[in-house]
Image (cartoon, rainbow, N blue to C red; front, side, top):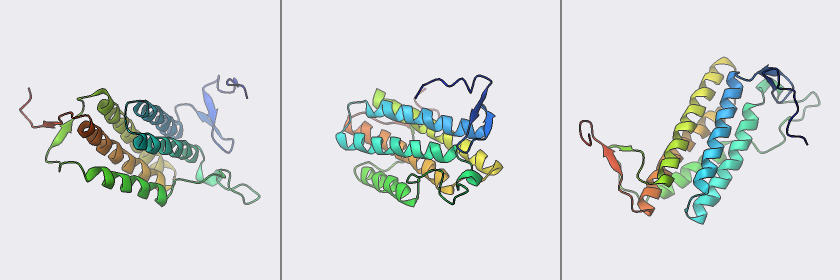
Length: 191
């Protein structure tokens, strides 16, 4: 398979199902941002963190590829004329969302209760989590906007919302694991 096809040289790209759209199309922006998020999660996974977290992040990366494929497939193109699904892969679903919730709950057991907003930073690994969280929120906003224009699978929106929560809690867990003090945002202080 060649990496270059030259079919996008005119500023268009194909969705699953064959429809060609401009590369700035909201659907492309949505799954392109998911791809960016996946790269940041790879960066977190490359840090000196536990093997269990690395395993979870690898699962999330795989799920983000699935989520991107779901975003790249308009709902009206999901079913082929022969009745089969165009994307013959396990989809993001309630089980995917529950996995994130379970891991969030597990990590939070050892964390102090939050009383203030927390300023991002303190360690490179923690900062990467916050960057990924922000990119995840952008992917979510774009997907919500896309859903306003044309319906997408609602589990996509739930998953992205929960994933940003996961990344925030992971940042807090890594702060604790690395003995990094969280800096509380207190308006008027720390100036």
